[in-house]
Figure (cartoon, helix red, strand yellow):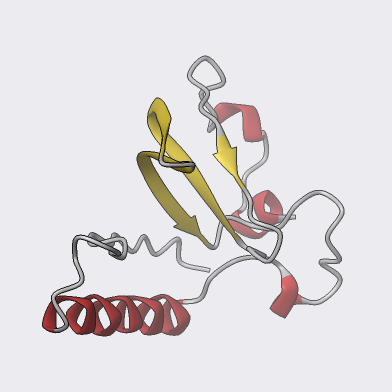
Length: 116
C-alpha cells in the first residue's frame, strides 16, 4: 500500500474529502488519471473538452495486481523526466509543423518527488 511506503499511519489526516472532483482513468492508463480542473467540461464537435490535469504515478486501481514493487503504480524520477522530455519533443514537432490548432500536448509539467 502506498500509505505504508510513505510511512503514513492514518491516511485520513492527509486527505481533504470535502473537495472532490471527477477524474477519468483510461483503460490503458495504468498509473495515470485525468482530473477535471474547476469541475468544468463540455462537448464540442463530438469531442469532450475541458480544463484537465493529467496526473501520472498516482497508483493503480483497486483491482490491480501490486504484488511486485515495479507494478505499484508509482512513477519513479527517471520515468518522470523521460515523460517530460517526450512531451517537450512531441510538442515542439507539432509547433514546427504548424499543427497547434489541430492538436497539442499537456504544456506544463510539475514533478513532485515524494522521496520513495
